Amino acid sequence: MILKALLVALIVGLGKIDNRILGMTMIQRPLIMGTLVGLVYGDVKTGMLIGAQIELLSMGIVGIGAQSAPPDVTIGGALCTAFALASGSGAEVALTLALPVSVFATSIGYLTHIPLNHLLSERAKRKAAEGDTKTMEVCQWMGLFNYFFFPALISFIAMLLGAPVFEQLIKVIPSFITDGIKVASNMLPALGFALLMRLTYTKELAPYLFIGFVAVAFLNMSNVGVAVVGAILAVLIFNNDKNKEAGLDDNEI
Image (cartoon, rainbow, N blue to C red):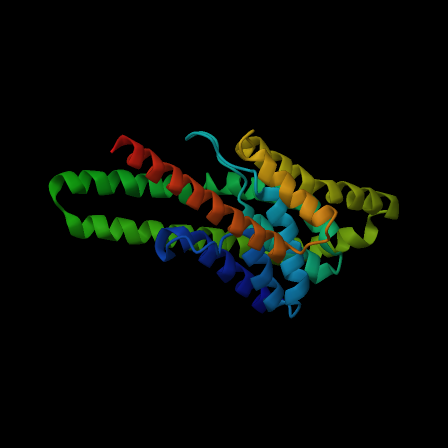
């Protein structure tokens, strides 16, 4: 148990420093977190499926402005996948707990590494004015360490304290409650898509959305097939726009 908790904590720590040192490889996304946690528990397929469903739920969740922080789906995705795999409860309960755990993780972040890194940032700016590049570098590396250490520590403690409690709760929760949770969890990915469409949906892009819907709903086309059709449409549109620009130039000449 301790070894698995440690490995999950290390996975979370790696996800948290991804876009700060590795160039945004998307390791921090629930899909990858779930897959890696599934590898720890020896069930990659289930871990990937749970991570994918949490990913759908969180796709449209963003933070707008400096005072609005989105739920920490990196920690939430990893912990909920680990809890579900440890208890054998499946994706339904994991999906239901994903957002509450993620919001709680965000709150803990504002009490630990985020204020510490703010202090380091202020110190680095003062040293920059003095030309002290060595101290600036130390502050940068300390900030990176904070973003790795504290989320990993939070996850490790949550795994040690939360997993046994989680497993016990699954055993004592009445079946009518878990059945209700399953029904609600089936709606959460749709909610994630709805949030995403609120951000990206436009009249110009709507026809392409419905092309994909028709391809899947009526032609039984796979996701790969829809992606290929989308790529072909993108090439056709790009070439058409390019030809229009070339035609305008010829007329002007």
